[in-house]
Image (cartoon, rainbow, N blue to C red; front, side, top):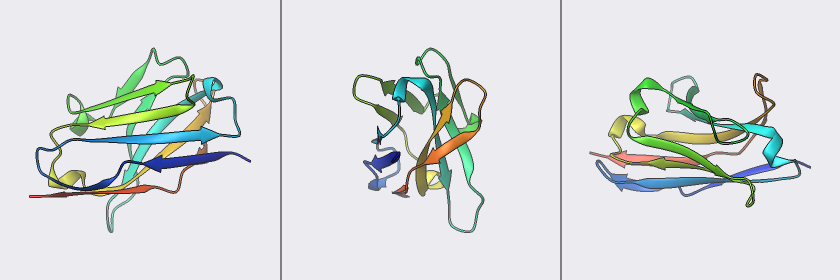
Length: 119
């Protein structure tokens, strides 16, 4: 059974940093691209960042470029999202997801972790 478990969310002030983790089990982690998404109250879920299976390719939502960094450790079956210079508009539930191969859609999703940024 595939599981993606996010952790690291919390309540912080604007300008602070958080690092989210996504621990994967039940799959061959190195075969999957990993993504982070978020959903704010009364808003649709939006893409935040993606990293290729090897870690060699990344892409980001424009509003987080230069502030967020996605990474992965295939030896630990874990993906990360380092979030710096957080803003109140970053407040959302953050989800990680796994996509098999380079161009496939996301097959597996975590349960989410809440990030709240106060002004």
